[in-house]
Image (tube, rainbow, N blue to C red; front, side, top):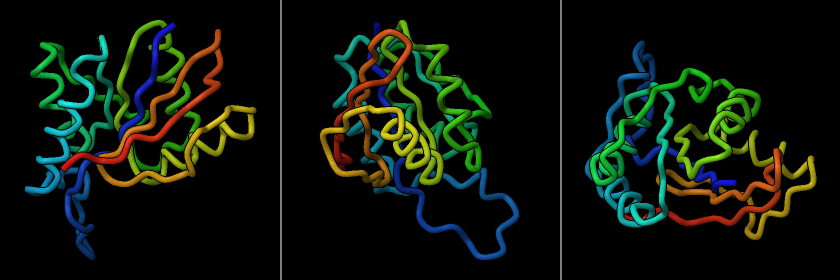
Length: 154
């Protein structure tokens, strides 16, 4: 079984009030530094899949890692904002036999972590999901059973 790395997208500034296209919001300078930090932290983890929310800030968060590994970042609507734990769990189940990175949002990740806790997973660290951070989750069969938090690198 592989490991699952769940990343909250890197910094893209604040949502503009009244903005009609939040999906197109790009990383800012801090966000690009965090994306480079993700690359540095995860490049040696034998990762073979990168799956992201299709929102630009998520895709960009994994771009440096994808370039370093020579693998594409796959867009998946099930990781988009508002998808909740069910979408992330569905993607996770599909990649469970690989070392994979999923990139999602500040509403999806807490839903996922709370779901895992309710199912008995042991999370070493307190629940948090800063922009550019990663949860490293371990599989036991078909269940995610353990996890630890990696703070953002910037």
